[in-house]
Length: 301
Ligand code: PSU
Ligand code: MN
Image 1 (cartoon, rainbow, N blue to C red):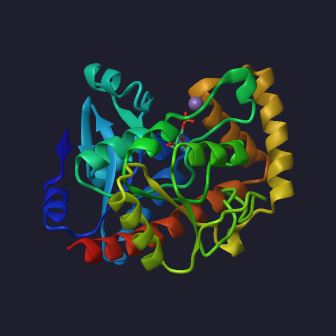
Image 2 (cartoon, rainbow, N blue to C red):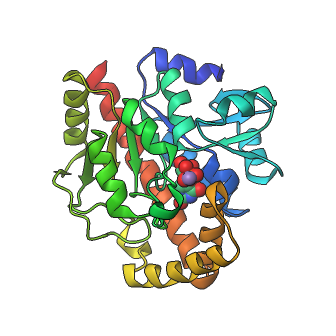
């Protein structure tokens, strides 16, 4: 594993660092938006007083703190694997490039001493789970890795309620940041009520500290709704999604290929609004994660 020297120094000094994933760059967003948002998110984290550490597997080498040139390659190179914890070793052994999902990114980030990660939406339980048993390995890793994960809920294409129930079963606290609903990615509300709502990030940090101090080893999810001006109302998302799901079934798209397929179909059906919403929530989450990591650094130093 290669840790960029400035990241290693920051971690050793207890300075704020925010981890970012690369599956989103390589597989979740189309060019040129993927590169733009990846670099902008890093900038916003720096402006927020923290260091961004984008993480991926570069020609077989897990790398913590990619350079802008490397991020550019993740955004544009052909044949990048989608790397989760089950194929991380494979990606390394084959000296392949791997865009790391939340699961693999968390594992690598935590080993490097980073305790805050941001993304758009975590993986979770798929809607047709009864048929496919498709449950993201993100949930496994969230259950066993003590980090703050800043996100806008789960990917819109998943079953929000089942994902929430799974998280509760695995002992992963889900704290609504200024919301009492588990956000539904493109929409601020999902109908799934949260019983933990924090008005401030200081409060979120205190809950995390207490969670880990009481012997727990799971992540703490900081659920941040998309900014209102970028929101797509839930009925509209649902309509686009049921179309996309039907198309995917017809085209027999399953497994890891499903997310990219559904997202690009929804993008067409919403005339690009879903893409703008995705960018907006990512940039907002970057700001929240930077602020959170600073409070965390102050608390622990
Ligand atoms: N959310 C998105 N787009 C994505 C992802 C999440 O809006 O591409 C990625 C993240 O990297 C997440 C992964 O960790 O999808 C989960 O994939 P899977 O369901 O195959 O585990
Ligand atoms: Mn899956």
